[in-house]
Length: 159
Image 1 (cartoon, rainbow, N blue to C red):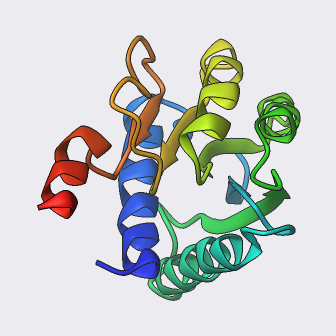
Image 2 (cartoon, rainbow, N blue to C red; image 1 turned 30 degrees about the horizontal axis):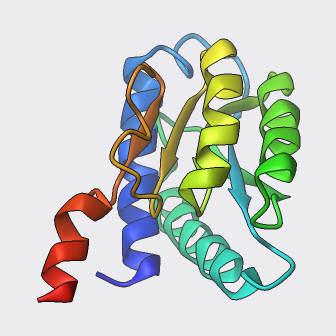
């Protein structure tokens, strides 16, 4: 599965989780705002670009079909620079914005580890399409990952 397809799948799972957790239920807003946290600058900017393009593609497809319960999706793109300290800053900004209903990101496990406690404290659902540390989501009710743990795929790659 390529990164854009993975992001589309992540977006759909994220929306389902957000709806089930009540994040979007009862809102009077006309749109659903999703946060995207990714390395948009620096050495990993090409990954951030793939994240952005995949999410925008999925949002365009969903909005073309009428959105979610008549609400259009929009995305707020934040640059975590692939740095855990910046990821925590980005998470704080997203968690502090009441219009953000859920977050897609971050790219790396280290950035996710920095951000997840902030999202958890804010009861904000987050899904990472790429981070793979086996303990990444342990203890979190709001963090999810789409990628298999590296304890599963690393030995197969070595073979």
